Amino acid sequence: MSETKTPVLKVTDLGIDFGGLTAVNDLSMNVYENEICGLIGPNGAGKTTVFNMLTKVYQPSRGTIELCGKSTEKMSTIDVNKAGIARTFQNIRLFMNMSVLDNVKTGLHNDISYGTIESILRLPRFAKQEKEADAKAMELLKIFGLDTKADVIAGNLPYGEQRRLEIARALATDPKLLLLDEPAAGMNPQETDELMKTIRFVRDHFKIAILLIEHDMKLVMGICERITVLNFGMMLAQGTPAEIQSNPEVIRAYLGE
Ligand SMILES: Nc1ncnc2c1ncn2[C@@H]1O[C@H](COP(=O)(O)OP(=O)(O)O)[C@@H](O)[C@H]1O
Ligand SMILES: [Mg+2]
Image (cartoon, protein in one colour):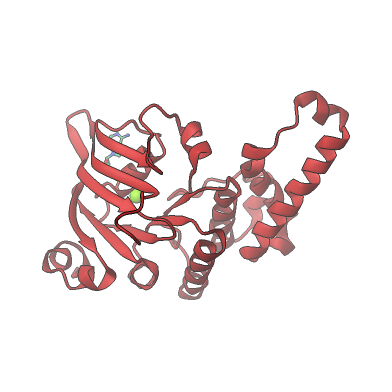
């Protein structure tokens, strides 16, 4: 991390209201190139709402979001994804009736450029790009240990594998910043350990920044370089895992339960 470099993500004084309820307020944080950062806090603290603002599912009421120095204010959800933010969801979202391979290939469509006519007529350019898409998707599946299940219908995968598939699909869009919303939720300790290694590998291999929401403290403290703690929509603390774990306010509000 370098303070002089432009952050991949720069959030300044971010806030959002739903009617009379202020769900997030005064949130500022940066995520730098190649960093794994954590966003933690009690249920209802506003963590998922932050992801929804970063991906423009919600338009913030206040503050700014910059991706690689560029404001996302005018961008739609699709624009933001094309500009380099990909995410997974707290409640898994996959095309449950499609194969594992096809789920990942839906993510690749950002950079496939054949036209409809070409694809209907199965012209050479279509065939070539389709083959390249298959290869790219299989490479991603391999990273997540899902290559042998490429033809399985996503809905038939065990829960832990569905979570991993969702990350593979997010990566297929070639993001600069990957947002993971409770990636270890519902996983057993062994699956969580595997996931930790995979997240580190993904960061190193794709050289991307990762921001993750997670309740599993072993995972959070084990892989995050910096952590932001939210409580009632406000930032309670920010720092390294060691700083967060020894912060009296954080212990009182969250860790010491
Ligand atoms: N679309 C919405 N309309 C009204 N309230 C919302 C909406 N989305 C989130 N909230 C509220 O914002 C608060 C934070 O929710 P959330 O971001 O899901 O928390 P977390 O992910 O930290 O558990 C909650 O009080 C929730 O009810
Ligand atoms: Mg949430």
